[in-house]
Amino acid sequence: MEENNNQQSKSSFWEFVRYAVIAILIVVPFRVFVAQPYIVSGSSMDPTFKDADYLIVDQLSKRFEEPARESVVIIKYPKDPSKYFIKRLIGFPHEKVVIRDGEVTVFNDSNPLGIKINNSYVVYEKIEDFSAELGDDEYFVMGDNRAGSSDSRIWGTLPKKYIIGKPVLRLLPIDKIDIWPGQY
Image (cartoon, rainbow, N blue to C red; front, side, top):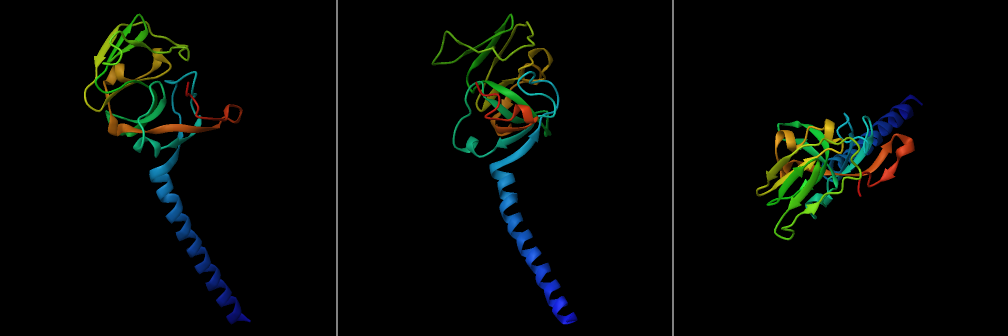
């Protein structure tokens, strides 16, 4: 009887090890290459995202398609890549971003007269004048809380390599669960 318990114990242990290895082989590549959780910290994207919103971020699609203008992206902070921010993508490489009296306009070869950026999601405006010209692989990002956001107006352009992905799900708070949160 004791020998049977030992065999059963060894069998259970190896079964556990087998399942753990399979789980690691599935979960680790998924978390590294496909999607990962992100918790919003701060108020730079108020009212679109609040502090402690729990998001699932798609890291895969950026490898196959350019993000859309005004889409929300998770980025590495260029001044300290160990920190992550959530911002809205405003300007693309070789464009000029001009802010006059708080209104954002983007100029490029296709739109020499400029594209006015939708500000309907902006509640906390900052009336300012600013301009930036973007080079190769440079992006311009801003928070929706324009009065309280540290973004490209403060620390400069964002290199493409620092774009992590875009939120595909908001899971918390429960009353705000949605797919493609913040996309307009």
